[in-house]
Length: 452
Ligand code: PLO
Image (cartoon, rainbow, N blue to C red; front, side, top):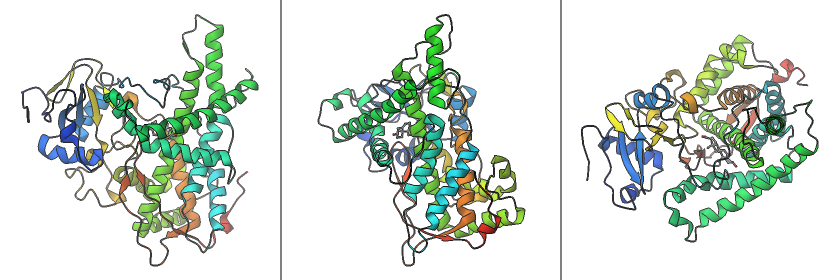
């Protein structure tokens, strides 16, 4: 079996009945790094067995584009999983557009900077305040609510969300090896507990919204979903929202909320890690701001054109530390092919973004952070399954970072080692905890206007 090279099948890892390729997959590396290593031996596209599932790993930009764009519809399936997080996949019935909350982001960024200014001479972990600011943007979008500092509901959200991020990727193992569910499984226990805390929070928000719902005002995403559900109930001939249950609404808003918080926060944390490693990058962005004189406390995305260096910095962070290094698995919905290789209907396809973004053929030194050098990368995926929040995320990243850089210089406390560049693999690739000094930059107040 080893190294099958049938003309038309992708090279495959050795595999055995029942356990599939599990033995050859034992590695202490994070899966995306390990899959990249296998690329050397097996090529850009190779296959392996997980339990009884045929899984194809795609490691190059060229083939990734074929899967996501050229044959996007054919590969648009998702694995049907016995899923704890989403009540068996009831999280994808809503495809409407989100409102972009530029104003809200500026308010949150400004408030966050005020808090940071209060920390003056001590080094702090910026993560809690960043997370609260990002959470409040999504919170006002989903539920028209926000969290004050120290809000116990926010603290509990931080906790359950971290629990889910750490364990949910392993939930897919249970889907592949159902017998894992029978054994005592600490991760599974944590996941179930965290999901139940999350569900209670979501259910409370839902109950409150139902209680004071009115057809004439649409306050937020949850109202919009409620309206779609009611109109489908009142009008049986309408096709919109058919079969929307309470669970569908809850899981949809839960996904948007969870994705909106964990992803953007993670990218902001990585941005700070790289800004303290490469202080000249922050300086260049600031020089841009000063030279162009475009920074305003009510900036919006159109100012991005005047701050090309900051925009390039964000692109480079998304390249070097993709939030979701393996994206979410795809499934071929029909017999098809990738390059010269045949792919059977039902095969799972994993696009290894890590390999794409660290491809030696694209970057001379893929591990070097260089905002001048971004190309051929897909941090948000592409095609029919492209990230729903891409526009919101890009807007938030741009505004939050321009606020931070405009008001502070970020430095490691004297004598402290630089934060680690190694990620912690979970459903998102997070940096490890670290503290930085946020020194207020002189003179920003002069340019300050009111953020109402
Ligand atoms: C993050 C933890 C939350 O408590 C629940 C949640 C919901 C949606 C998930 C998100 C988590 C992680 C990032 C995911 C997102 C859907 C799309 C996004 C997987 C688990 C990515 C990066 O693909």
